[in-house]
Image (tube, rainbow, N blue to C red):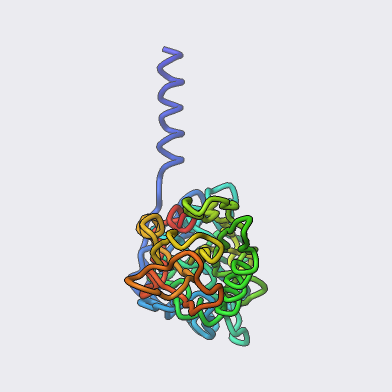
Length: 323
């Protein structure tokens, strides 16, 4: 009998702890009260961003809408998640995994405040505007708004790094001699830092020395470093392109030859990654090839692959951390 009473008592505790009180205000808004917290959606709250498509680095001002005077002094939060609806509980529970959302912006609700949203992290975002009173016992949220934040356009890559590509090409020519030759390469990144977004590269890396004219030179294709922050204002590095050079055959015998432009291995690498590829190499002498003994400084140019489209927009956090 004692065990039965204990069981019934525990069952009542579970039922009470899981009970939600439901009501409706004068506007017909459904209000839930759970564990002492009053929670409701307020259609008057808005980010005014639904359907927005824009490049990372764009600032949006005056995008938040609050009912005039009603929430003054409350705390507002713009929460977001890539590919899934954000969980408002992240506001008070930092232990929740970031894949349930991050706080994209926050501040105090005031008619004098000009809220700004810095779109710094690429992705197919779902945003909500949340307001919370000082006691943290009342929460109002907006509807979900969908925003697509793009990686930089490939045209920005060439504009930002064409001189660096030419520099790497000249270093390739300077390294070539009777002793050998080697390729140069670097990764290209979209970098968010100090409230600004730019296109940058990492250091110019040297490929292996090739001593034999029958061998093919190789590029250092080491995986890029990815810095993906949990705070939109933290520094971030996202790979959006790869550049490398091919080597001269100036110091090789006349029978040595190779095709110019992207090799089969290059094309395979391009197909494995949704990013832009750039190559500096000679223009063709004859039927798309160069031959041993050619002029070291003969005409060369920049080749492109997969450069018509920017890096695909991440549909999840996992997409953001891969390339």
